[in-house]
Length: 243
Image (cartoon, rainbow, N blue to C red; front, side, top):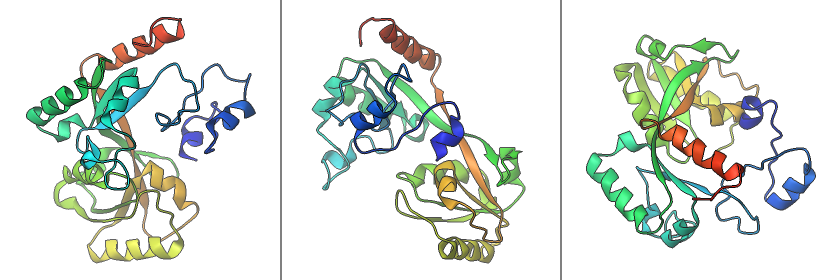
C-alpha cells in the first residue's frame, strides 16, 4: 500500500512467487524491481543490490533462526553492488571494520549512505516541517525491523520526545491497540503521535483522538556515490558489465 501510494504510475504486485507475479504483467514493463529478492534464486536477474545496515551488519554472525543472516557472507560474491546504510550511526572505526569485512567476500562497488528524516505528513497529507517537533511534544510508535534507528533520529528533538512504544516487525494494528498507544502518549504529556510511513499504511481509518504524523525518510549518499550507483545501473541497462 505504501509503495502504491508513492508510485502511482508503477505496477506494484505482492506475491511470494516472483515469477508468477512477473508473468502477470509481462510485456507491460521494461524492468522488474524485486524488493528483498537476493535469496529468490529461481529468478534470473541482471543486477543484485545488497543493503547492509551498519548498526546490525552481520546478523549476530549466524543465519536464521539463530541469527539474522539469510545465508552466509560468502553469498556477497553474487552482489553487483553493496550499499552500507545508517553509516552516521556508527563510529569511523566500526565503519572501516565493516568495509574490510565486506571486501573479503566481494569485489563489487561499495557505497555509503544514511537514512535522513525529510519532513512530516499529517493525516490529510499536509507537509509539516520537522522543526515542529522542537515545538510540540510527541510520542512515537512503530512496528519495524530496526526501531532503534528511528529512535535515534527522534532523539535530536530533545525533551519534546516524550517516549515510544515499539511493536514487532510487520505489526498489524487495530483500534484498541492504537487507543492504548494514544492513552500512553497523553500520560506522558504528548500532543501528537509520530510513526513511520510503513506503519501509517496499516492504520487505515483508525482514529484514536490524537493526531498522527508520519516521518518521510530519504536516502543520502556520501559525496556523489548515488550518481555513481545510478551510472553503474545505467551501464547494465545499456548492455554493459554487471560490475
